[in-house]
Image (cartoon, rainbow, N blue to C red):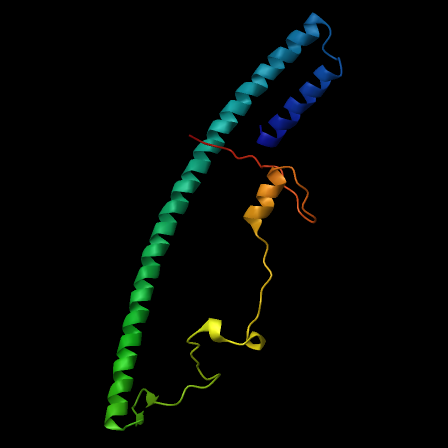
Length: 167
């Protein structure tokens, strides 16, 4: 029996009870027996779900750990390649050989394109025409005001969600 089917049957039984369909002792006993069977099925299904969820969480953590390890190796390779590239460029510049044709590679030292780099030594010294002001909400102040019962136009507190905890 699927989790959906169990939930649907439990909800149907609750609806019957709420609609007054379980007035007689026989009907109540039949509903109780059926409900107990569904309860057992739900617990069994929940046990399977919880075990599978735990397995997926552990597998996810192991894969994340392996991904972090591989990412660190990739970063180390990239850093070494950058250092070797800088050393080769320095050697080419110091010898004046800005182009080297090799059987498998063509090396050249050239000027970098794109926008020219610049240095802003003091942002405070910049005139207003060179500064962009960004309007940004102060979320902590808005939350505090709403929690205190104040009205803040365009803002409201959302209901808290729920979470399943598996221990």
